[in-house]
Structures are given as structure tokens and as C-alpha cells.
Length: 305
Image (cartoon, rainbow, N blue to C red):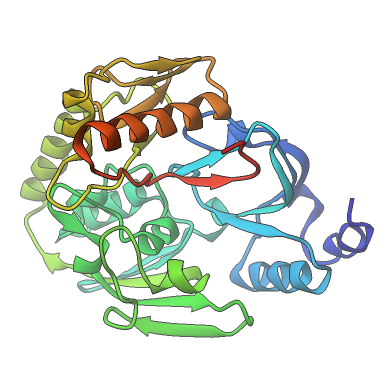
């Protein structure tokens, strides 16, 4: 234990927001992962800034998470501080066609707020089980839409502790990445620019996309959504299907029979099972088709390969 950090963190964050030896399986959509030394939920942007500064001051490793919907934590857990930007920092403010949203807001909550205000353009994201912060980091997208299509500006915290507001262009969005990811910035909040629309039409579109997800995706099982990035010129799920890997299993981890682009936890998978399956699927697809499958899922902690 880092005693210097342990002593000082109590003066920075309310004790009820500090969890020690916290099982990360409670905080990832894969529902796997060992304990983090600390799991901390700052109550404000200023607390977040102070906590990050304290981690740096005491040489304490830290990692930022939102809903844990794109994260695989090792069975050994994480030796450091997992900082969750979530409910405590999830304000949504609307003025005319603009939404000012804190990074911890769930995309579903943003979609519902847009619907209530008769704003269209965010329907594609409303069913993604993540937070705004994570969506900005990876330029999340679905059904033909991406965050870059609706985001005006984002305020970030740099590794040096400086707040910066970046324009859409400065965020350098591309497929499943952004300058935020490349530079190690932390998203604090963002401004979204939407359009006025008809509430019934917006609601119908959201329901249509929700039905598509339910029909085509294995939502009944823990997963991290699409496991692999889309290779240029191909679809990951189709390559995996054509490699005859539908239903392929390692321990409790399985290639979904409903959608081959998803690796699911059938109920008793370990993080090691899931990562081994991802590696084997990648190897078979590379051998059969010469295509590299790059995982979309981020890893945290120690893995054997």
C-alpha cells in the first residue's frame, strides 16, 4: 500500500467515495476482473483534478473509467487507483439546440434528454451502454452515426493538469479513436450540437434501433459490445463466422452464436478465458484470411500474453 497516498486521499475525497480492494467485476460489462487497490468516485470536476494531482504527487498509478463497457480487467486486478467518472459528474444542461454534458452522463440519459427536448441527431448513440467521456475518447458510433457528427467542443484535463477546450477539428476524430486517446487526456465535459425534430419521429427512431440491437446482439449476456475494430474492407463478425468460429469457446468465454463479432461471458468466464479466446480468434482469422483483427476492448492489469 502507498501510505503517502492513503493518508492524503482522505483529505481530498469524501471517505464514502473511496473503496479499497474493490472487485472490478462489479464495474465492467464483462462482469469479470480482480480487485483494484482503490476505486474512487470523485464528486466534482475539482475533486477529480485534485485526485489526479495527488496520484501524480505520490507516484500512484491511476486509470480512468466510465461505465466499464469497453474494458477487460485482469483476474489479478489493478495495483493502483481506478477513478470512475460516473453518476457524480453527469449533469446535462440544454439551451436551444445545444447540450452541455458532463463526462459521467450515460449515453442513454443523453438520448432521453434529447428526446424530451425534441432534439434529433443523437439517436444512434442512445443504446450504447457507455458514458459520454468514453464515447468521446473512442469516437463511439453505431448505425451510421459517430460522436464526431454531433460534438462541438470537449473540455479535457491534460496530463499536466491543465484544462483545455478543444474544437471538433482539434479532437482529431477518426475510426474509434481521437486526440484524447492518443494524448492521454481526461474528458471533463462536452458540448453537443443537435437539430430540432419531431418527438414522435425521434422516439420511433430510438425504438427502431433498440429493436435492431435486441434482434442482432447478445444483450442477454455480459460482453463489451463489438469485441474487434472493423478491419478496412471487411466486417470482423463476418470474418469470424467464415472462419467457422461461431460458438467457439475457451472456458466460460464464447464467440456469440447470435453475432460473431461479440465475445460473451456465459456466466463463469475469467478475464484470462476472454483474452485467450480473443487471441485465438485473431490468430485463426489471420491464418485463414491474412487479416489482422485489432481488439476494440481495452485491457487493464497483467495478462499472460
